[in-house]
Image: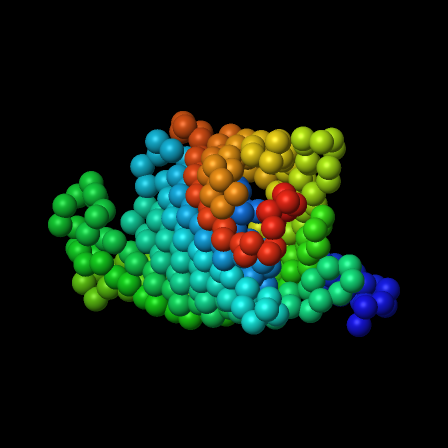
Length: 315
């Protein structure tokens, strides 16, 4: 299994899958995405579970278009780790997303299996997800009180989904391909007391991620990152960026999300196990009159002593 033939096979699989995604058209972009996505690829790829060779946990908080009433807010908690001598990985990703009177909570369990090659590790992953979507009509503030067409009770619906992903990595490079939600679902919110019907249509998203880590000098590493998102009915959206790792302590960089925003990122390694991060997005769309989008990150890694901490590869 440790031959050049294996590496050729891996590249061929990734190339074919990537090409099949590019030929697809899109429909709507609903899958939540972080600006600092490199610190939690588990949210979009179940194959990422256990790939850091450590128990890894983190917390994200994102406030989009700050200052606009009802603007999106997202909280995300995750944990994943390798098991069985690193041959398998398990993970849990919990996310809450609020937009106006809409509130969605999802919990996804992830499982991965690792294939080892001379050139790196290829992980294949599966996920199972439970989601609850709620329309909080009681928190609405209509212009006319007592309008019979407006529901006066909250409505909630639940659904299930599953996903698939592949992730290849070594000390200096990674690439991932995933469909975190394979099932396309239509959730309809109806009320017996009202003529209003709300419909939430969840569409299949496909993600391709890649990045590398190269040493510039004794104190500086450069880390280019990329995430490309495809979904039927919407333009293909690439997210490109570069970070610099300074003195094994600071990460600083910027990214560009095509047709959406420009972001700056700053992360600080408090200890070898604890890291904090912040990003700010400058919106390029017609949605103005707000204080930008802010994202905070807290990450924690516990690695076995025999693995060491000498190499600054955090992806």
